[in-house]
Each structure stands twice: as structure tokens, then as C-alpha cells.
View 1 (cartoon, rainbow, N blue to C red):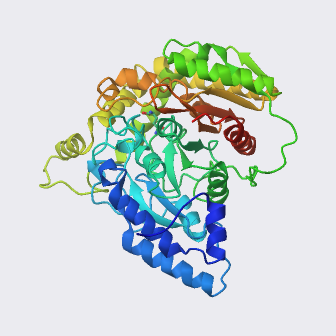
View 2 (spheres, rainbow, N blue to C red; view 1 turned 135 degrees about the vertical axis):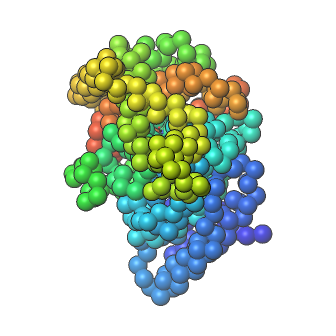
View 3 (cartoon, protein in one colour; view 1 turned 90 degrees about the vertical axis):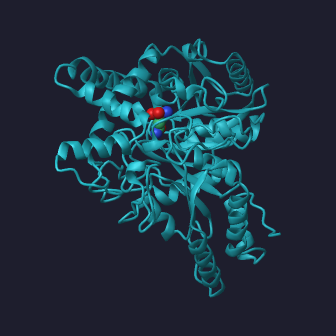
Length: 481
Ligand code: GLN
């Protein structure tokens, strides 16, 4: 048996420095855990040999006095939409089967430069479209707390990788909640920075004006360290903000308690599980007693966020996914047809799954000449109003709290059969992506059905520091899970 225990990155690195453990022991531990947890189907490819080699190399370097990078020896799993040079990346889609990345994403490059060890590639919903991780060419992922439940999606594999202790931290992507929602279902932390904080270079695009790489972990301090390492300006992504807070230490001096708002009509929404509502209300009361300012706001745009999100993201997806014609990426289907249109049709109909095809069709519809103004333009107008309202809120408040999901983890095979019900369950998460603000789900609560659920916190753009510090304080003082 390999003896290794992980508490947090800081402790691990102290143990490395004092020779209490080494990277090789850590990697072997995780490889064994991954092997033992195969039935969860969270990891679709393990980079076993190269992780061992890299661990040995890092151990050697340390012995020879080379200063360790900030993520020295940290084992990380990446979602199957994040490119890693010479490694397979498929977005869990048959259309990309066999495709190897020609270059590494900026996030991966920065992880490697910081001495991290990328140990595997995780399962997800096809092209990051979904909320259950059931739309995957690799089949579904099981929630390790209760294997009859989904882990959430689309980054379900990355969430379970952290939940089941298969790595120290993992990367996912969040276009409408795909990091925060599975974190909620799995009882871990899932953090999506503001739009433009982490470069999207080398992240397979779903909806480019929404997509952000996000981070899963068990400690806020670990998440903050990864954020610090992989964020920042990048010549390959002009939407990355050039300035902003680059220090994310959650222990930095918090002088005063942040002012918190919540949307009253969101907590009163008919789709919200009564027990989730009650536990969040009771937390709000407790926070007030403890000296926090917590005030209700009315959010009259609540019913518009899901339709707006699905009009805009499907429109962007239909354009982004037009590049997958079966020729430039992935395995070319044989035989070549003489009729090019037939050839494309054949490749795309067999290569894409049902949900992806549904979204390409929806997106093509809302962009079509006759409907463009009625749907796409309208949705853009709603998005602009939403951004203005968000700015106004953060003039008065430092943070906004909401549930992450209206219910605890769904049963396998349940909601995925009903796409509309699945879309509606995104009611609390899509707002942060529409407004481009940071959001996090922290595992504070336990439902009487035995499952965990999270509290979602959002802050103003570029105010990740406040968000992380508040998350850390709340986890320290109010964790009931
Ligand atoms: N559940 C949302 C969707 O299906 C979120 C997806 C995501 O964030 N990638 O679009």
C-alpha cells in the first residue's frame, strides 16, 4: 500500500520540502486511486507513464536545489475540452475521436511551467453541452457519494476526480454553470472566474462570449493558487483582461465584512427545493446576527436569463461547431463521397450526438434571416440590460448570494430525457456567464436526502479576491456539510 495523504497544496509542498513525501509517492497514490475508481468513469485517459517520469524528474530537481514552481508536484486532471500538445482531446464527441492537440492551451502551458503534473483527461458532456455528464461518447459518470445520481455537468468528470480523491485539483469549463453545478452536486468547490480572467486559447469553444476555464478543489486556498498561476494576459486571447488583482491569497487581511445581496424572488422561485430554500434563509439570518449586511433585492429579469442564455449560446455554438466537417479534425469517415454536401452531412450526422445537433439547429434557427431580430437581437438586448443591472448592484454590494441549483443531484437517466427541464435547472448559474462576472459554489449544506448542496456567491468583475476571501470565511464558519 502506498502511504500518501492530501490535505492541501501548502501542506503537501511543506512535506515535499522536508522530505516527508515525494512527487512519485503522490503520483503512484493517485494512479492507484484512479484504477480503483474506474467504475465512476470520471477519467477517460490516464497519463500514467509520463506522470511517473515527470514526478521522478521533479523529485530529482528538488534534490538538486532547483527552486520549486508554485504548483510543484500538484497532480491535476483536465477536462476533455482543454488542449494539451500531443495528447488526445475530443470534447467527448465521436467527431473528434482520434484527434491529438497540435499545441497546448495557455492554461496547460502555465500549469506545466509551474511544475504541475497533469495526470489525466476527464469525461464531460459533449462539447460541454449538458448538466448531467450523460451526453458523452464515453458514457456517463457516476456521482461518488451516491452512484445512482449524476455528478452534474458538463464538467462532471473533473468534479468527480476531486470528489473521489483522484487528483488534488482539476480544471473544467463553465459556459453556463458547468463548474459550479457539478461542484454543488458533488460537495466540493467549483469556481468560475470572471470572463477574460483565464485565457481561452486552446479551450475548445462552445459559446465564445461565455466560456471560461474554471477550477475544482477542496480548499479555497488551492483554488486561489491555481487561479493565480493560470490567469493573466495572453497574446493568443485578446479578451483576457490586462489588469486586475493578481494576488489571490485568501488569508489577506479582511478589514471589514463584505455587504451581501440576495435575490428574494430567486429564493421564492417555484422550482427551488423547499429545504434548499429554508437552509439558505437560515444561513442569511445567521449571517445578519453575526454582523454581515445581507439585503434582499428584486431581480425582475430572473425569468429571462435561461431563454437569453440558450438563444445566445446556441447561436454561438452553431457558428463555432461549423468547423467540424469530418475533414480537418478527427477521423475522416470512409469512404469519401463524391458529393461534398452528402459527405459533410454524413460526417456531422454520425459524428455529433443528439444534444449537440439540437443546439446547432436551434442556433442556426435564431440566426436565420427571418428570425434574427426576433431572437438573437432581442437576447443581446436583454444581456445588455442585465449587465447594466449587475453593475448597479455591485456599486452597493460586494457580493451576491444565490442557490447554485434548484435541487440536489438528479437521478441518472432522469432529467436528460427532458431537455427543457434540464435547461430550466440552469436558472441560477447562467446569470454569472451572461454578465461575465466571477461565481463560485461552496459546499456548505447537506440535504435531509443525504446529498450535499452548495451556496453560490458572485462578485463584481475583477473582484475574484473578495469572492475567494468571503468563500473561505463562510466555509470556515458555516459549513454544515
Ligand atoms: N448546463 C449548461 C448547458 O447545458 C451549462 C453548460 C456549460 O457551462 N458548459 O449549456
